[in-house]
Amino acid sequence: MAATRAYLDYNASAPLLPLARAAMLAALDSAANASSVHSEGRAARRIIEDARRNVAALVNGQAEHVVFTSSATEAATTLLTPEWQMGRARLRMGKVYVSAADHPCLLNGGRFGAERTAHVGVNADGILDLEALAAVLAAHDKAEGLPLVAIHAANNETGVVQPLEEIGRIVKEAGGVLVADAVQAAGRIPLDISAGYIDFLILSSHKIGGPQGAGAFVACSDLMMPKPLVVGGGQEKGFRAGTENLAAIAGFGAAAAQALEALAGVNEICDLRDEIEASVLSRAPDAEIFGRQAARLANTTFFAIPGIKSETAQIAFDLAGVALSAGSACSSGKVGPSHVLKAMGHENPEGALRVSVGPATTRAEVQQFTAALSSLLARRAGKPQAA
Image (cartoon, rainbow, N blue to C red):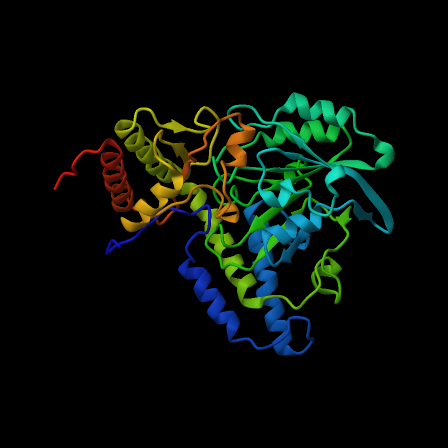
């Protein structure tokens, strides 16, 4: 194994930020339950509410509309339900419509049955087929309930960014509800839930440099809310029972505040991504970069090189001290090509590689990737490596 390591897998999990670690350590000094009314309990509650404000600010939302969960997957499963409340009245969603290239937590339909989950196709660049979405929503039987549309704001494998404002307009014209999975988008592109075309956003702490084990969903208002997934006590206004994970929420809030500031440095991150892609194409002109013609996250590239299997390449890069992935970490270990590439119409049985960088990524790490790539390609060509 290489003596130094280059971590280029931010889309799987971003390294814990020092400020998030400090916030967690400070929260661990509080032994109180945030639901308690004594001074110690109120101090714990302040930690949570400070974090709630920071998470809301990341998406230009309101703190009272943030519900903390244990993960983005839990948040998605909470929102993807047929049963909702509008005030004291019950509201029903008849069907959920998801992108065929979505993350598994949306793709599987949450609490909707398979017969009430419909997949909408994407084009060759990974953009949702807007005409197909409009067509299925026009054909939706409102007697069964309202249509619920759930889609990623940015794809976790390709980094392709969806036209959420256009999608929101189509959904609103059909009288539906839009849930956007902003796990990869948060802190990488501006998000504004106050704009009105998104009803709910899903967020994850560990994708932005907070700890694992914390997520949230943010509502644009409190007009309607889903039936809770976890019931019991009255935590999170009854929308997610269970004593709050104080340390994880504190770290999440600190990471959210820093992620909002980091948006100003997106051009530098894009330069690193472009440098990585240039090194791939200069050394392997036959490589294919997926979603390159679409708007993408500045930090993500997903590519394939003919003749190189992704599993083999991952091992080679790891031995060379470079951490990257073959796609979604949630799907690792599964045999077969990426469902995202399949949805985009790409036949790629040998797989692809995802490189994702972050604010702490250095040019030295990019150079380490380039050196490892050169060695891998030399072995593919059967050429001796340079000393």
